[in-house]
Amino acid sequence: MSAAEEWQHWTEGRTARASAPHGPLALIGTYWLEPEPGKVPGLPGEWWAADGRVRVRASAADGLRVRGAEGGPVDGERALRPDTDGAPELAEYGEVLLVPIDREGELALRVFDPAAPGRAAFAGITVYPYAPEWAVPAVFTPFERAQELLVPNADGRERPLVLAGRLAFSIAGEPHTLAVSSSGAGLSGVIADATSGRETYRFRFVGVPEPDAEGRTVLDFNRAYLPPCAFADHFVCPFPPPGNRLGIAVEAGEKQVLSR
Image (cartoon, rainbow, N blue to C red):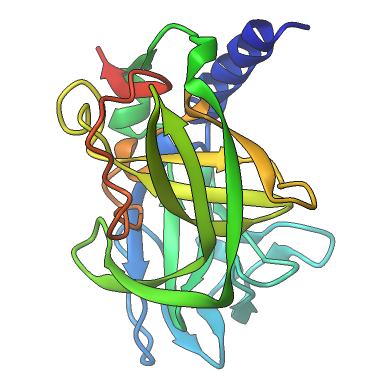
């Protein structure tokens, strides 16, 4: 399979995941929980945060269920492990998926509804045509110690972004750098450029394969992709850290979410 064919397969997969019944377009709310029990709009029972878990109290007649082999109807009080746990516990209310999340020790419940208006209106993701010249060689230099930098997030709050090092690369003979984070076996960056907020969403993410022993890798801007908050307002996404706003127009990768 050629690089262009692999990219086409990637873009089709991105569209399929975005439009899935519980994909990012289905998110209708992120509800930050207090230590005292309270209501979550549209859901039965009482919800609160305690001891690193999302807790719920409901009766079997309410129709809440926990997924998995240890799941079943919620009848009484139940503690759910959040997404930062190795084995998070998800719940369901009919077709609605409930995902406990933990962000810097604060717990919330995300509610994904397949009937969300954004999912019904989705008409695809616009992308630039594949251009091999936007896959550029890059060299990663790790920081002596990971740096934790406070950056604004899409919800208006500042949260720490852990940066592992810098990528150095050139475009049209001009040198550039990006601060990047570790992500699985590779790296990831939050970027903006001269197209941001105009042709493209206000910022994008890009993944980078694991560098070799000399730090060499490939930064493929054809795979610059929209953050979750481009699909629904209820996601928490970090803005680009200082230095990651490129002065050039990166005319590659995903542009915008299309609606009918």
